[in-house]
Image (cartoon, rainbow, N blue to C red):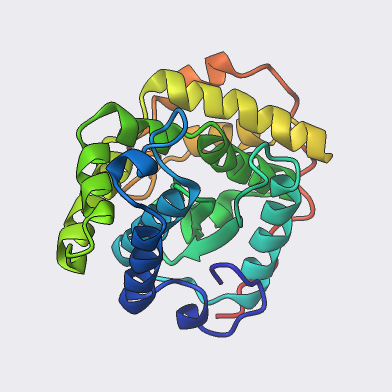
Length: 264
């Protein structure tokens, strides 16, 4: 699922602890000292961002039910996601898309180009245009470096950079630091202004790619109308009413074609 649409097992696509340790070692070898790591406006190198993103992605998969093993749904998400990513600003990333086996209605992004959507939200997307709107929103979080900015603003950057620069740092310490990043993203989420920016940017990205621009709005309207929503519905996002007010009043897309029947 995570990375290759036709892959048969999660282990082939989602990085495990051994792979993350190897990634950490590679990042360490690129740095002579912490000053060399702190490059660019974000204070993170690309290699460091990707290593952190893979670790955060592993946390997301663990927390939200693991991989949803549906080949058709996986193929659809990867096809639409990769089309959108071709028009993303950050072409330096290897964009990857995954499905989570969770009843929570939510979607997530991690640094380095990692995007997830839960089974419950996927099943609510009545058309490819709606699914594109959801995925484009998450792509915009990464394209605009929202998670990376959270790391750079606080004390997290110094701790991670020190670990990467320290050749004697063990993986447990690195994992703890990355856990702090995951907590910021998953538990606290982004501020309302950031979410509105991702909504607007995602709408525009979907439209530029050829999808109906009202896809995200249609999904939000459908979620807002749920009589008995699942346990978690965009729990870290601003209210749906507020998000709808910020989006243009685009007409909804044709509800067909929808997601293919589950093979499970």
